[in-house]
Amino acid sequence: MELTDADLIARVLADDDQHAFGELVRRHQSSVRGLLRQLTRTDVALADDLAQETFIRAYKNIRSFRGEARFSTWLYRIAYNCFREDARRRKELVGVDEAQWQAEQDPQTVDPGLRHDLMHALSLLPLHERSAIVLCCQNGLSHDEAARVLDIPLGTVKTNVLRGREKLKRTLAAWAPN
Amino acid sequence: MIDDETLDRQLREAVLYLDDDGFTGRVMASLPAAPREPRWLRTMIVLGLALLGSGVAYLLSGGARVVREGVVQMADFPIWLLLVFAFGCGLVVGAFAVIFAIRRTPEVRDLTRLEF
Image 1 (cartoon, rainbow over the protein chains, first blue to last red):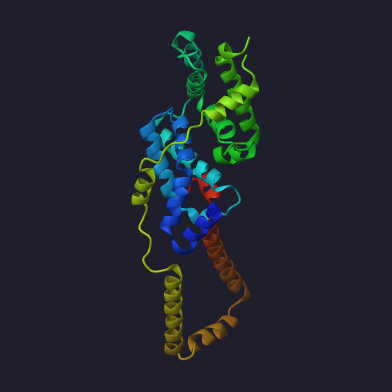
Image 2: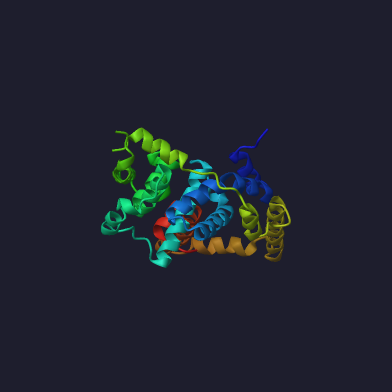
């Protein structure tokens, strides 16, 4: 029988069982690395470095995980904090400005394929809208969970998701069925 | 314009599973080393040493004679001095309690940006 996340966490807490923590890393590495790739605009090396930092912080602070949220939500919060601290260091926390965003909408620059266009459009969203879309629409978090991860009010998450979706729909208008 | 259902489906389907490719191994190699002795053993050692130290202090002080005499002497102090002393003790204990609570609560620690 496969152990649940809660079982593995209990083993880490009771015996500092690193094998149990390794299993947790294996289970969640894809979603955490995927989230960070979206946040870093597909900078794979940076995303993986931040993901590694995320799991090391999670291991060091696992006693502060009280099981009120899902383990994955807790990891996303750490990952987002790692990204935010790194971005602050790099002074890149500002999103793409509106003029650049409009310029990137030039259909000549858009490659064929809805999936590819969608990922391209997603990467062009400002950080606050991209984060909300990735967490809620791609990773299946509720608005409330996303608000905890991003440390912003619930209403702001809803607004960011709504605005992000509208921009994506505008960008992908050419794909609408006639 | 593309409809909501299509957008949601495309967003969900765009999430790819990333192969581990040695990522877990790199994380595990970077973790701080686990303590060799079990946690309960460390707790028992600390507790044992504390009890031993307390016993030695009790014997050396002549059965806590110093403490008894101190309490008797404090009884002669004016009440306002005792109140100030109690208030000071309360402040010190309260300060330690707040620091401990902040350290144990990541949300508050992040909010206050305090480093301990």
